[in-house]
Amino acid sequence: MHTMIRWINRLTQNGKFHPMWIVLAVTGVLIVAAIVLVPARYEGSKEPRQNVAATPRQLPAANLPEPDSGQHDLMQTPHGVQPVHFTPPSERDMPSGELGDMIKLGRNIFEHTQIYAKGLVGNGLNCVNCHLDAGRKADSAPLWAAYVMFPAYRSKNHKVNSFEDRLAGCFRFSMNGTAPEYNSKEMIALTSYSYWLAKGAPTGVELAGRGYPEPGNPPLPPDAQRGAAVFQANCAICHGADGQGSKVNGQYAFPPLWGNDSYNAGAGMHSVKNAAAFIKANMPLGKGNSLSLQESWDVAQFVNSHDRPADPRVK
Ligand code: HEC
Ligand code: HEC
Image (tube, rainbow, N blue to C red; front, side, top):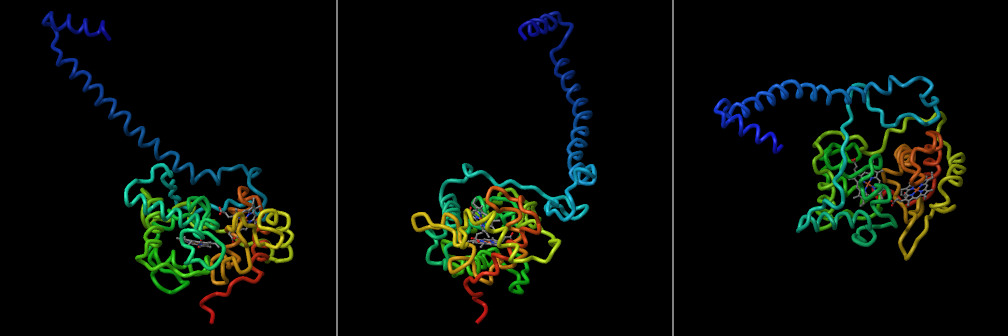
């Protein structure tokens, strides 16, 4: 560097060379580089997207799962549709101040509903029991993917639902409780938390990981008796042989799957298809996608064949 400056000084002192020439030369090189490199990078960024779509069809037949083994790629999107991937912000990037406090309250209500919204809950569950990892986990109906898809028409109640309506639905059915008032602290907190988790996501776009992956039909009609065996082998260790879960210090550490403290008969999880989809992707906890499609449907049928609180819409 030092030698170069001395050399430039010598040239300019000789009067043969004006420093402006160097500036012009460098600018010229940069312009040429930009013209050559930028289109190349643009092409490069298109490459992987095309590969995502092409990969499944290029897999050698030997690597494809056995048909009907239940190991299908559940996240397959219809041909030609590119899934949009999104990662929610990390906990340590939560803002401070009043909005930050509201977001934190929302997270607390979501994770510890029994403590932070006790009066609104009619069973032993917390929101996080079905929306894993504080509502972050893809394929377990994550909040960030839901937030950007409302308002939306729902056939369940034949109207266009606001996001608050959707939250209210889970209070009424999944939590067998009462929906918070729409301008209550609880509702604003849960909305703020969901809004923050969706920060940077496009609105109105179905994000990869929304809801549960479509499970597909099982090879045989679901059967509760086969499901009982799946349950004893894979679920009873945590949820109890009687499906009632277990408590630590008065709170469920393992949530009940049926009975008075579980979701009611109007809940989304009471549809065998929804339960099969949730179980396939998420249970046994930490070993999602280890059950076959048939096992998931059978155990879902078994779980939902037990008594639970009635659907509040049925008089
Ligand atoms: C017993 C399990 C269960 C519990 C507990 C539960 N939910 Fe849900 N939730 C579901 C199911 C099932 C769906 C429907 C998923 C689907 O359609 O793919 C759902 C859907 C949602 C959605 C919409 C997801 C989407 O992508 O459209 C939101 C938001 C939501 N729940 C919030 C909550 C909140 C807030 C609580 C606690 C007050 C809660 N849930 C408790 C099972 C549960
Ligand atoms: C290693 C322990 C463990 C095993 C094994 C396990 N679960 Fe779970 N399960 C949990 C926990 C813990 C939760 C709540 C998750 C949370 O709050 O983060 C849960 C949640 C659930 C829920 C939603 C909440 C509810 O109470 O309805 C269902 C349904 C469920 N499990 C079904 C099953 C089924 C069916 C199996 C067997 C195929 C199974 N689980 C195996 C620990 C387990």
